[in-house]
Image (cartoon, rainbow, N blue to C red; front, side, top):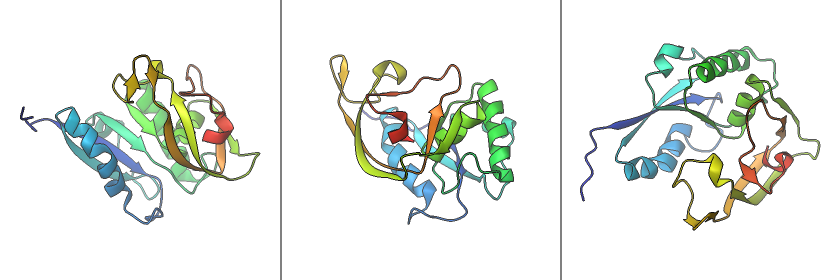
Length: 186
């Protein structure tokens, strides 16, 4: 069966670093991670980068032209007083009010939580660097996102590096992984 690539999956990536701190361009990294998934649903992935640190941030009207938004990690903390963090927090609140689909990775989920009323602090246990395993809460994720055998998902192993943690979620958010403390996930 041949899949027609007439549809695009447009993703806005809000860069949260001044430079490529991961040893690789962040857009290239997300292209690698997401392109296979987009092909599986018959769409051609298009990632458009906006630099949240240097600005300008996209307008809400621009964001509404995308299928979703990714906010990646950062060496900054969600509670830092930098102007770009305040601007990004305001954009997050506007996106939520407009029901924009978004995902935050590391710093990204911390800034989303904080922008919506959650609390983020320096990890009282110190820097967390390790391979962690968790079992996803299948009811909180779209169908087919994780390999499953019947009603149970396979454990997911990810490398984590966190100096900050979300200690309280904004209402009505739910923690997604089961069996892993928030302090170890960041």
